[in-house]
Image (cartoon, rainbow, N blue to C red; front, side):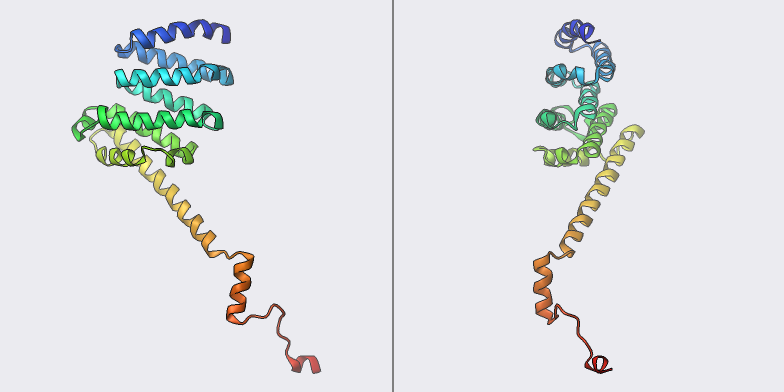
Amino acid sequence: MTPLFAELWLFIDRLLTEFVKYDEICESVIRLVKHSQRTMGDQFEPYLSDFMKKTMSAYQQNAIGSFVYSVEFCFTSYNHKAEYHGLFREAFDFVCRHTFNSVLPTRQDCEYNPDLVNDFFGLSLRYIRKNEELFYKSAELETFVQLLLRCACLESFNAVKTHSTFIVEISKNLKHQVMDARERALVPTGDQAAAHSQEVGYDSQPAIDPVLVER
């Protein structure tokens, strides 16, 4: 597969450069890469960075959901590898920023592009489920929240479903973080426990009833 894909890659690169404005061609190319990547596994890694950069450049020229989805399926496969965290953080920040400022700048744009809304929150859902640390460390988190509010309660069923699922997921995630933080705050360290015992007058040795000793 690798030698064949190496030859295909030149063709893929050209299509995503010269035919970036043709939606159907780009969607077919993204499907080809997706299935190739799943078949190749780790052998796709030499192409990962170039492919991600190519799709981000293409998304800037033609804002279709396939380019957002390309980030999602790459992230799903390689998010566990620390060497790619910078690449995925950069991709997510760019998608948030460009989508908010240029692709879906108004509520009306969100209504007219429900498929893109669905793909965007599908990507966001994947990030928070697979690697919440990358999501919360995004430099565009505030932008993301504004887009989350802008896309609330659309008429499209699929867009609303994905948007709502993300809200449920992040609510559960934040609840667990709050509960964990509360538990850590309630469990005293050894030094804190000793200091507390001294404050309330506890003795480290158990008290012995003199009457019981005499008997």
